[in-house]
Length: 113
Length: 114
Image 1 (spheres, chains in turn cyan, purple):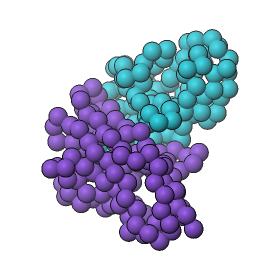
Image 2 (cartoon, chains in turn orange, green; image 1 turned 135 degrees about the vertical axis):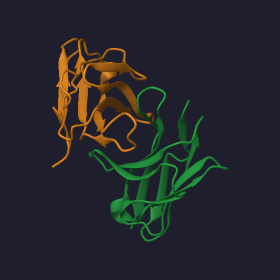
Image 3 (cartoon, helix red, strand yellow; image 1 turned 180 degrees about the vertical axis):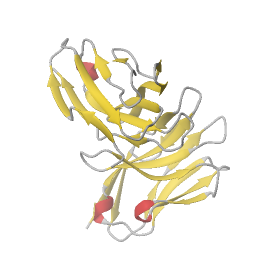
Image 4 (cartoon, one colour; image 1 turned 90 degrees about the vertical axis):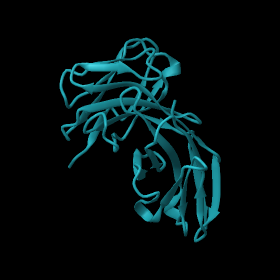
């Protein structure tokens, strides 16, 4: 089944403890991105990756890192999480940067205390 | 810059009555527009998309939207609401200036009363 998977789905952590949220797609997509969803704000893009080794900042990149060493994986790294990073995170992918349709993962609900 | 404005944060309808969720967009070029739905504690599902073909777009589950350039609108409609339609709906525009960023509206929560 074609899909985008994220792990973990739920995570509660403490301020400053490094964490990684994984994202993997099995559709051979070139383009991947991360969004965060906050009430009343919709989704906002954190980072995106045009293809392997090429990443760039979205609208809200502060406090996040990403890497794209393989086409299928695009992990989101929080080096020192803070409470304002408590949010619902979505990974998305599309065939290439110009594709209209993007496929979303199921989401990761992160709470930082 | 591309942007969308969803005109209602909450909409309440009775089962079997029409649904109208309003969205206006701002775009410096011919836009690609989408509606996504998010059911409680679920991920995002694409309802329909407009990519400069027919202005009336049909989506899944009986939803449709009409692109009106003169009004810069892309309202979502459904003739008859079902209880299972209760969810949050997002109007979205593509911004190709930096990658392929999806710019989301703030969302409209649809409540369906029995």
